[in-house]
Length: 354
Image (tube, rainbow, N blue to C red; front, side, top):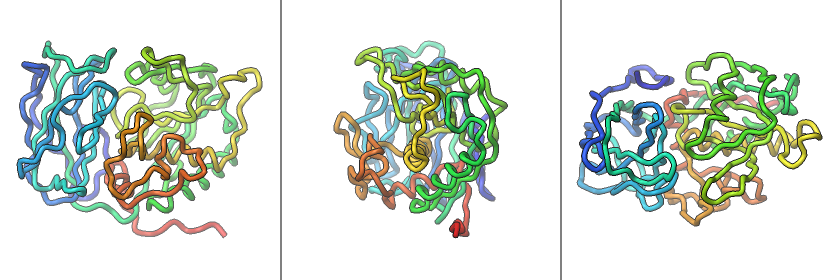
């Protein structure tokens, strides 16, 4: 089944038959025919524990946008940026920068090693199913539902007034990009550990946090307020604390699909929940929602620049969103965010609080 999606009237997922990863660890070429629309969401699903990446993307004019699988969590040389996926992928492709998905295009996927993040040359028994969802138009404004999952380690635990204030601050951050968020529900996670470690494809600890929550809500982004969060890279350690984390750019499918925020400072477990300024906290959540909705960093820590021509380094998607200059959104970022299938169109601007 295709992923949960907030479908506008007349939109429907188109599902292809499953295909096998064959020679070289690659699927056959899969074609998305021309459609009347400005963007399209691709959903790809494989077996549990399988990692894969987009191996090629060619448009109807014969131009190549992705030429090969690249080692690492995301491709650096692709003209359309995509990430390594584990079990499922949701890739939102918008028009712009010379790429016109509505004209039709062809893709292949390839297996990746989940431990080394490198291409795998053997197909094995893994299969992949592809579905796509064309969106006729990108809304001027959008609405997104959130759910807060709050551990006892967070300053938000048992504080509904503070949660509402955080939501207001978050909407202030998202106003420029044309997105309004509402809180559909809040639940407590009283048994969450004080520390959770994770890596690109080692997400069991983050998934365990979600397992302690009530069942997920349709098209609702979970924001998990946990304890200390450490990114534990087995190649370039030691484990590093993070100010926020989204397991994969383009959220909505796959393991641990949520936004995760720390509640404890990793160097002071005994001091109780950290009291971060709500404005700063909301700014980081806005940055992480950008990842969930398909945005990469304006420039990666390895120097890889954003492929959006109107986005510079001093942007909310800077790798360090706490920097003084890390403010604002570009028009291309707005188009990407509002194209995500979980974002519903909203015609009226958000009323301002007096």
